[in-house]
Length: 363
Image (cartoon, rainbow, N blue to C red; front, side, top):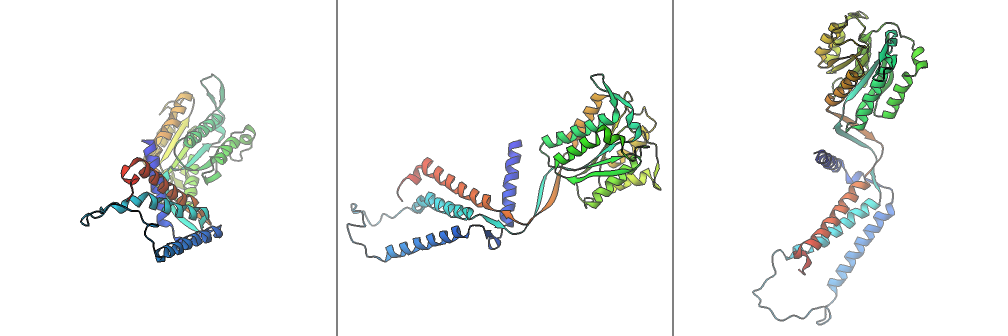
C-alpha cells in the first residue's frame, strides 16, 4: 500500500507539473540543440518532398507481386502497424527538447504532502533540575530527560514519511523561539542538542518559575507570524514537569490563552514528566488536563522512562495529516519532465514491437 501511495503521489505531482507548464515561457540553456532539432526536421521534410516529386521507375522502386483481385482492400487498421515507429519518433523529439535543458524562469506551485507544522516546546525552568531515574537506574535532571525525549520525537518524524515544518521553543519565566519553522531537521536537532548542553542550561536567562501559559502564547504567536493560523496541520508538543499553577498570565486567564490555541486549531499535546507521579497525583494536573482537553490534544503523565517513551511514540503515531505549501522558485529545471515522456514512448514502442505480433508484420 505504501508503494501505491508513492506512485499516486508521483503521478499527481507529474500531472500538476504538466498542467502548470507553459511552453512559450520555457528557456533553453542549450539553444544549439533546439536549432539542430529544427534543422533535422526541416531536412527530413525536404527529403520527403524530393522523394515524392521524383519519377518512379518500374522495377527499381517497386516490389513485383502476383496480381490480386481489385476487390481486396487494405485492412482498416493496417496503418496502426506504424505505431511503434511513431512512438519512437515522438520520444526522440521529447528527448531532444530535454537535451536542450529547458527551465521555467519563475515558478509558483501549491504542493500537498504528508506532515504537520509542529512547535516543540521544552521547559527549562529551575524546577526541571529535579532528578528523574532512567531504566538503567541512573538519575539525571528531568530537563535532560525531556530534551532527550524531544530529540527522539524529532528523529522519529524524520525517519517516517512525513515532511514536517518544525520549530523549537524554550521557556521558563519567559518563552524564547530558538528555531523558527523550518524543514531543516539537522538545524532543529542541533538546536535541541545546544539547549541540552549543561553549560547552556545553567545560563538560561529566565529559568525561574514554570509559566507554561507563556510558552503556549508565544507558540501561537509564532504560528501567527508565519501565517499558519488559517491552515490545517498545526500541532504543539510541550515537554515539562507540569509544576505550574498560574491561572493568569500577563493579565490573561489560562482559558483565554488556551482559547487562542483552540481558535487557531492547534491541538496541544502535553507531556508532563515527573518521576513516580501518575496522572492526577500533582496539584496542577487537573488544571492542565482540563485545559489541554479543550484544544483537542492530550495530557500525558510520564512517571518513568517507559511511560515517557510511550507518550512520544503515541504522539508520533497520531500526528498524521497533510499540509499545503506554496513553493516559489526563480528557476526550475524541466529536463526530467521531457526525459520521462521520451523514456515512456521508447519503452512502449519496444514492448509493442517485441511482444505484439501484429506490430511485427509489414502494414
